Length: 392
Image (cartoon, rainbow, N blue to C red; front, side, top):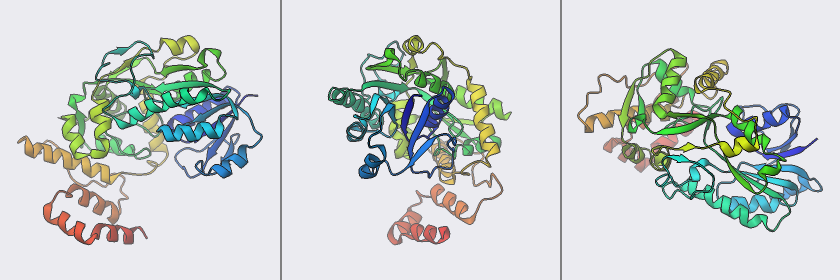
């Protein structure tokens, strides 16, 4: 029985890979701290409960062990890949790196990317630039080891806890978008939602990924593993509305405006999602004939909604994100002299369980640009003290 060691295993993508690997008869070992409650690993999975960054502990756990494949999903920069390869390079036959289709220089390649050999490193998004550097570093490091490397570039993926869109709350809180639609609150379309993307449900992605394990066609090769659906961002939210039986209410806002309002998402939206991208998946289909789109976007989104409904909306409502959308809509309307009357703004107790802390979080975020309030809070750190007391 082939053994696959996965660093992680409970993330949106890695969880799907674990389940597909088990389905195909692999023995799966995961290095995991065991803190995630969003998705629970199958009992047949061997779990090494440890902090992956604690080298001494990991080395003691894998000493004298050899794996057919190692997958490390926690590499985001060159230092990460150097650490990972030095840790696992002598313990595997094949090392698989989870990169991203965002590595391509989108401003230059905004149409169909026919093969995996076009120019990488998108200078407008540090995440994609660092992933590209990881790829190059892996190829360089691999020459010092006996393993074969495989680089996988997923496109836009989604699963039980993730709705595919560029402006979303943290994973586990995506039910916030569902509730906004159900309560007729506006959603923001950057650039009218007309940019295209290749969307893939993680269960389909996992078939392609696992099919590359031990596959001679995958050795020292790069693949973008992406489905066949090529849709606009508006199509994504329209499909979600179809699943919910409610037509979403939109407001189109320029991506640069959104980037300035939410700096943490600026590079992702302005440098990534605001460019169209379509990937030719003929290479992965040639290497893994079973790979194809089995789950349509609408079917996949229904699975996500059903998961949130059956898991009590998982982590709940992200009122910080909720307030940010309302704040941005209100500000944009003021600047453009647009009436906010058509848009339902304000705090909503979506699940009928909101606490005073939730209401305070929403209020403070919505009014964070108020000069007098900001001045008081910044000077006395009132927010930190209040929130600290409320959390106790």
